[in-house]
Image (cartoon, rainbow, N blue to C red; front, side, top):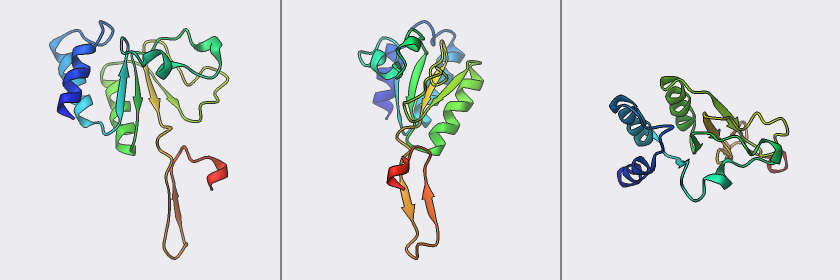
Length: 136
């Protein structure tokens, strides 16, 4: 993870990097994540930031964070608060109002949170946020 963080850190654009304190905050955030981050300037950024409704694809977030755990969601929200930027949540990929993309903020993508865990005795089930109805 550290090598990945160093690579990402070296790719950061002026929208994210700034003071030493900002650099340290970003490094700390990257180190806490289990998921992945796509930043401006990376080849896959345009695809990562795109939404279904093309009229909103002109928005340019600072980054797209692909969360793989509830802890990733928490760390992303806390980081957005720490650096004083907005965040938006992307889940099913069918947002027609543009609320799953934000300009100069963080796209918090939860599409990888799609597990279903059922108790052995079938008395309960744990269903993550991006499980489609067809799978339930």
